[in-house]
Image 1: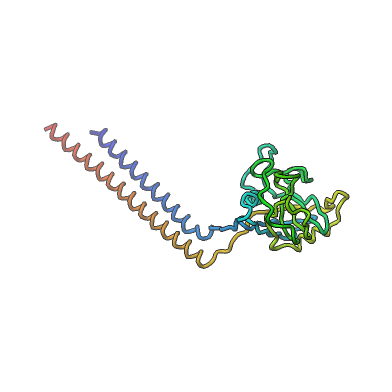
Image 2: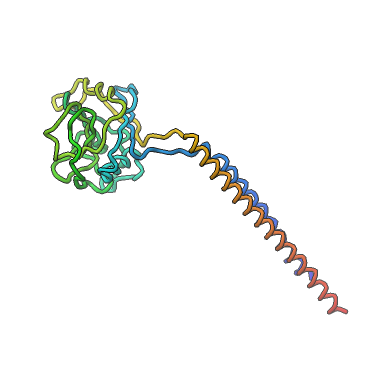
Length: 272
């Protein structure tokens, strides 16, 4: 009889502990749902930024619009190198990330070049697809300043290096993929153009990409309404789950007590 009572009490304690744990877990999930509106962040996958530092001084960001509909593979390579989301390059053993890399080549009235995150001199870097990937197209031309294009060493040798034009460069048409354009920060590009350079066109003052990534979007009123509706639905779902689990625990405890009572009654009848 004592074993039966002990077993029943153990079951009750187990169900009680499960109830307390479930309640705490769902309460935590509800708090996360309430905070989700504050931490929800949306990004523009077709707009990236490069935060620049010249000679130790932060000078602002260059914002670039990507031609994702025309060159999705090339734009995805650039976007992912801006965010650093692909992790480490296996054969270079360095992060696939523009952050911390430098502008290694400046030719006034022509272009500024960067993106060599491994060597910093125009001989390194890698794409997210492997060391190199194929040309995706040449429909966009080098017809004005502020265009962003892939640097290469011949056909189908795109990696991570890119350049921004400082003037029309029609002689590059058909050999370099123009995959974006500067939409803000062209004044920073011009500032870099005016820097003193060595004989091999390398700036004598360090120009570093201190941060980079996708541009964040400001939430609109419509976005707020969608987020609030989703939050409400999640809270209602969590409360429903909590109620169902509470009811299950209650039923289990009642069944355990009823079984104890029936077994006790049967034992008394047997003794009689």
